[in-house]
Image (tube, rainbow, N blue to C red; front, side, top):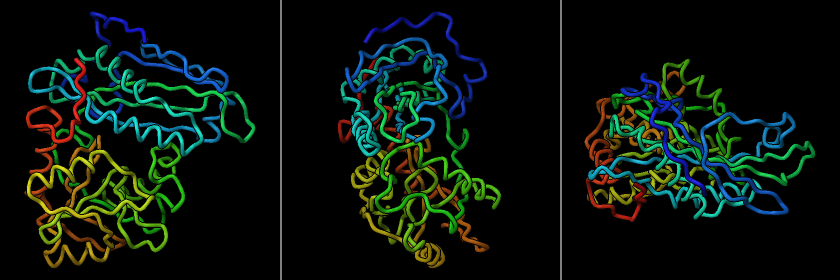
Length: 354
């Protein structure tokens, strides 16, 4: 892969230096590679971030052969920069591609793309080391063809943006709305991979949650509409009878890397952990009886975010005192300490880059 030097005059708009928000403070560089049925993968190249030129008959636009990932690079205690669990993201990216009949991006190519973008755009982190580089790998069917079949050509991209807090600068409890009308994923579907087709249908439920006075939607299982599965695009945890409980992976939940990290970290912190199913009724009654004292969401973007109140139809219930509980705060800090190199890495998760 050909690397190019970072320009002296960065493209960073000054408005992003204090609060970059989430999702639009794109950095300066982009890795690109292409795959064809006849030749396989081309050599990836690093160049300036630029707009794409695509044909309106591109398969990815019509038949949703599109998968993506999300991972972050963090400034470390010694000033270096490391990506968090990129091999796990590469493995899930490959599983997502296989599920959609797309070619897998080799792990070493994925890692090299992460490294090249981070090295090229590391200066975006120099103004504020509490910010992160959010990396977005993308793979899409780029053949111009409208026959309903798998594409014979694919494009792989690796881009990044500067990220602050997903829910704002301050970590505040969010309110959530239980969706009884819509389903995120069904058995045998694509709920356990990161494909673009999972997310478009979720947006109406998210709008309904906001209209109901909530920031996020909570998804239930497709068969009975009783069991809690995910919150928006995030995994959920409950502190229940002193244990840390998260919904079991049933094939309809995304196996989040942050979720997996917290299960390990919680055990090191002395919390008993369990993966088991929990119904909305158990959640509500547990909060009212005091058996469930905390609930939080986790993900690459959200890190660890407390859930304060839940709306289910016309019924509202509060979790604990509605604020961030002690286990949530402790686990959030422990995770951030690992990601920034302030605490021992328990799983070889940090991939040092520059």
